[in-house]
Image (cartoon, rainbow, N blue to C red; front, side):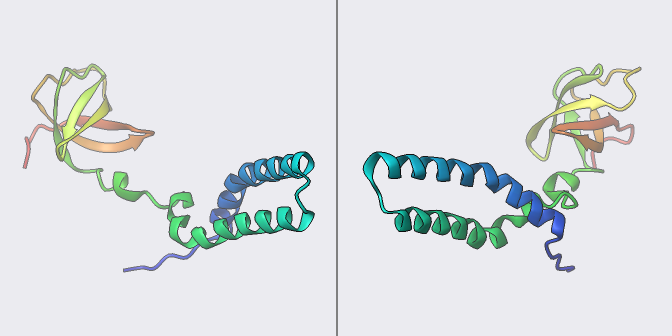
Length: 137
């Protein structure tokens, strides 16, 4: 098994995703400091602790920020399923017991309910499929 490491892009995506949250915390704590006369050292301590929380969590969640990681959906390509309704070109299919929105790769000929389909790819959360003439394996 190939062990992947984080890249500069993964780290920067994670940091940019955390940035609005940190800005919001700074605004809230600064407002609370003014309203309740909280000492400045405690405000900075809370800000630093908040940022440490993000740093500590990064090794556990970095896979979600890796664009090269296709995840479980990438493994759907090549699988077969059944049309739950007529696909012309959009409709729903069942693959591995899960319901998916699907679009025909070639929309000229519809796939009818119950017919076998094969997954060609994924665009967003919609499967690109075609009629499977061999049937389900």
